[in-house]
Length: 335
Figure 1: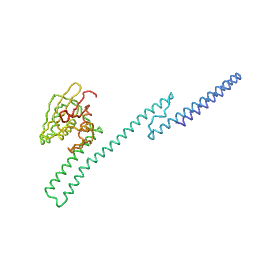
Figure 2: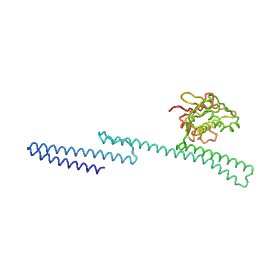
Figure 3: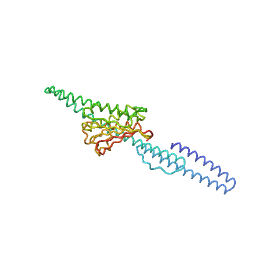
Figure 4: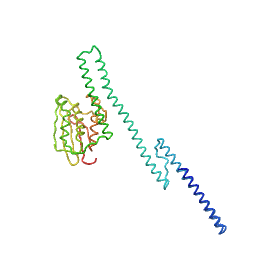
C-alpha cells in the first residue's frame, strides 16, 4: 500500500508541477507580475502538496506499526490520533477490530485455564478409584487371601467400577451440554411428571434409609422444556438431599405456577449447607469441606446447567428450621 501511495503522490506531484509551469508561462505572457504571482502560487501548491503527502505517509506508517503490534499480541488502544476523513474511519474500524481481538484473546485464555483445571479435576477424580482398584487387585493376587476377603475385595472393585461409570456418564452429559450437541426439547412438561420420574431414581436408597418424599402444590403446574433432561436435573438434587439426610428424613417438594414462572421448591431436613459452601455449591467438582458422601461434585453443576438452558434459575439456601432448600424456577419470558 505504501508503494502504491508513493506512486500516486509522485504522479500527482508531476501533474501539479506541469500545471504550475504552464500557468507560470501563461502568466508571463500577460506580464511580469502575473507571471510572478502564478509562479509563487504554483510553488505554494507544490509545498502544500508535499507537506500533506508527508503527513499522510506518517499517519499510514503509524497505522502500520499499530497493526504490527496487534499481530504480536499487543492490543493496547494507544497511538490512534484524531484525524478527520477517511483515515479517521479506518482508525475507527481498527479500534473496533482491536476490541474484538482482545475479547477473543481473553476468552481463549479463559478457555485454556478452564480446560487445564477441568483436566486436572477429572484426572484426580479418576485416579482415586483407579488407585483403590489397583490395591484391591494386588490383594486379590496374594495366595494368603481368604475366600471371604476375596469376596469383599471383588465387591469393593465392583463399587469402584460403578463410581467410575457414573463419573464418566456425568462428564459426557456435561460435555454434550457445553458443546451444544444436545438439543433440549421445548414442549409442555408437567412438574408432577418430572417429580414422579425423578423420585424413581432415589426410591431404593430412600427406602433403605427409611426416608420419605412429600409432594404438595399444583399438580397441573407446567413449563416449556425437556422432560428427560429436567428429570436428570431434579434427580441429582434429590440424590444430594438423600445423601445429606439422616435415616428417617423427609424431602418435601412443592409445585406452583403463576403468570411469570413455574416453580419447584425442594426441601430436606438434613444438616443443611455450610455457609462457606453456599457460593460454590453449583461449581463443577466442588465438594464441601464436611462432605463425606463420596460424590464427585458434578451432579449439582449439571442440574444448574440443565435448568439454565431451559430459561430457568436454581438457588440453594438453608432453611431456618434446619436443612437445605433448592428453588427452581422456569420463566415464561426472557430473563
